[in-house]
Image 1 (tube, rainbow, N blue to C red):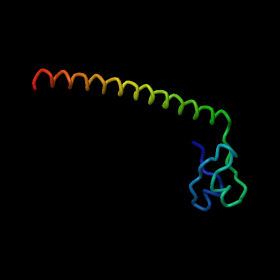
Image 2 (cartoon, helix red, strand yellow):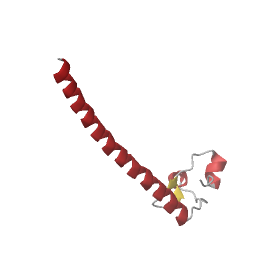
Image 3 (cartoon, one colour):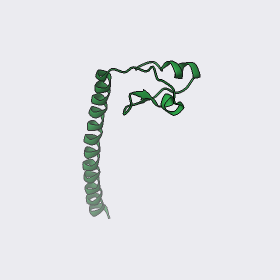
Length: 83
């Protein structure tokens, strides 16, 4: 994680990189020059990590839906047996 740019550090602003511009959002909002430097490799690594996590979430949601359907079928079967 990069450290805050000099303006954010000096003014105690929350330094968040604006991916489209490459500068932090606080410097953009205040119209000042940003000293934040983030390598493209860092962007790619973070994006790849996010993509992997999102893929896992999709897989988990699919599995959850399947398990909920199985549970509903078992609930229906249970009702037939005991009611």
